[in-house]
Amino acid sequence: MSASVVPSAGFEYYRDRYWNDFEIVVRALNERATGDPAVTWFEHLRDTAGPFRHALVLNCGNGWVERELLDRGVVASAVGVDVSDDLLDEARRAAAERDLPLRYERLDTNAADFPDEEFDLVVNHAAMHHVAYIDRVTRRIHRLLTGPDGAPRGVFASWDYVGPHRNQYSARQWEAAWETNLRLPPEARQRMRYPLLPAMVEGDPTEAIHSELILPTMARYFDLDHRRDLGGGVGYLLLTHNDAIHALAPQDADPHVATVMAADAALLAADPSTSLFAYVIARPRPGALDDTEQLATWTAEEDARERSAAANGGIYYPRTAMAALAEPLGGLMADEHGEIAPDELLARVSGRSMLGVIGLRLRVRLGLVGRRLAAPWGRVSARIRRRPPAGTPG
Image: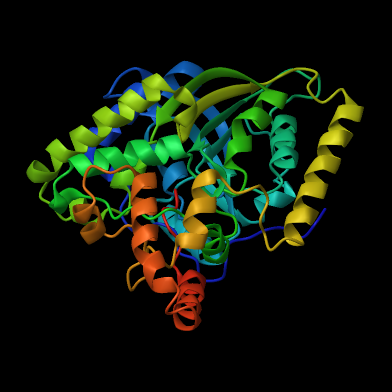
């Protein structure tokens, strides 16, 4: 197995503001996941498949998920695992303050070297989209939840980002979000920045590393008893890290959030494949590990993929059409912070599609390139190198 991919030193989680900070979004996600805007996935999991005796929580972070599982009666006890000492310390302190039946261990989920205990629930909450060796880890989870007789003895619950790897959104997703953004007033508008691969790899090389593979890989080893697409193709892009709309008072923000979520629902209904998130309850499929030849093939493919990426600067897949357009033009379209499509540009090109804006901006700027080749390209490359990570699902 190649060296594991881990977050960059100093990378911060639980930062910034996300789309599910809005009550309108929370209720929409609840309804999409459980069928009832007032019922959370915790309660749905408890009532449809639980309660459970002992859970393993992947990439537990500061421990809020397992504390919520206990508070809502989903589990009686849990073990949380993570690679971050600081977050584990925070989780341990919070558990100790309330004398909760929680234990924490430091380990890299990629190694799939989980505690050898009898778990009847494994929880992936925004964890698997950080896993490089996703087949190996999913296979190990199957083993944890299968009894000695080969019968299922537990449940794998997943609430995660399953959209394009490293947030390389499709033209359809980006265009739908762009058009919705244009309908918002300036005080609620997102500063849309297409996530450029070099910045994503530098900021956190594990972010959405193989997010597109989560559901297909689960389906190799598990029966997906309950799968619900949660959307986000418009809502996540426009409401997460949107400082403008989060700065508004709730009564002022809510109408704009409702507009965004209506567009999000329309995109999800028209094309479920654009969903960025999914909620799944799965059970180990008996016999899924019997075909040793197929397992060996999948292992070899995974190892080869990771070796290739390590030799390619951490890049795994061909660039999307949007990335192919955005990366070379990033500097030409950027403001002083290296951000694509600032608000003032949106105001000037109101009503144009994203691709139309790219063409317009390029035509305007190309008139200057011939006279200023030496200087601007140096500045462009510097901007690309220092551009901060954009739009992470957390």
